[in-house]
Image 1 (tube, rainbow, N blue to C red):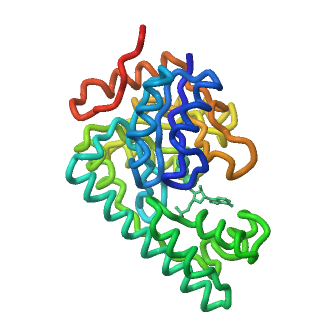
Image 2: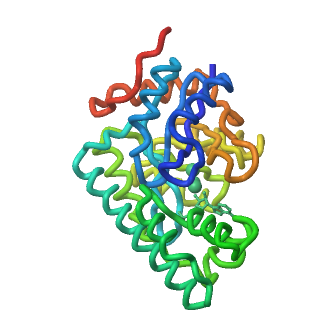
Length: 283
Ligand code: AMP
Ligand code: FE
Ligand code: FE
Ligand code: ZN
């Protein structure tokens, strides 16, 4: 039995609906999943219902973009209660900031003569958690680019004409928010950053775990991060970071967190009263 604890749906920048995601998880033999869309938990009720139907354990989660000592990184919040007032207010703020940013990026592109049709920008502004991948898709759909990669390369990477800064919360504040909503804070894909030196200060800020297993971690990186997790007494998690069909075949199930590690993680989640959506496991 295995878990995949890092997954996205069309509620942020994935292509699967929650139901498609859960069905695919079941087909690929997973026994537990977490839905961790960027800055939104709006897909969690549907993913939870579908998980119950398929007999999967489900953890509601969210991937937050945070600032840690001037650097951007992603923190996964697990077992969160989205109704908790401070978290609900924060997620609403994220939504507003993302919509403002979409309009700002479209404005910057237009200044350079790259015109994304106003109605597609408007459509993006109604999404739950729009971001650069959505603008990228609009650039492809309107014929300005031939692929999402080209859109990022020419227009959307930091420093390119369409890029606009993204509002981000301070790491310690994010972790306080996660804890107040009954959750655990896990550093996402540490192997994608050069910030291992920051792990002690992240621990001081309240970090609970490290995503040791990830699609972009080599086997040796995974071993390295497991040692680091042990050294700092951090929980060990893992997930594929599947975004559906955005880049070829879906990654879901490609990273399998062993059940004993999932169990340790789940044990830490369960005592928190505000964790509403974990279904009891048949065993
Ligand atoms: P944003 O949060 O709006 O800045 O967008 C960041 C998201 O863009 C990441 O979560 C990735 O899913 C996605 N992304 C980054 N680089 C690329 C790329 N070259 N092609 C497609 N998606 C990308
Ligand atoms: Fe993403
Ligand atoms: Fe991420
Ligand atoms: Zn992710």
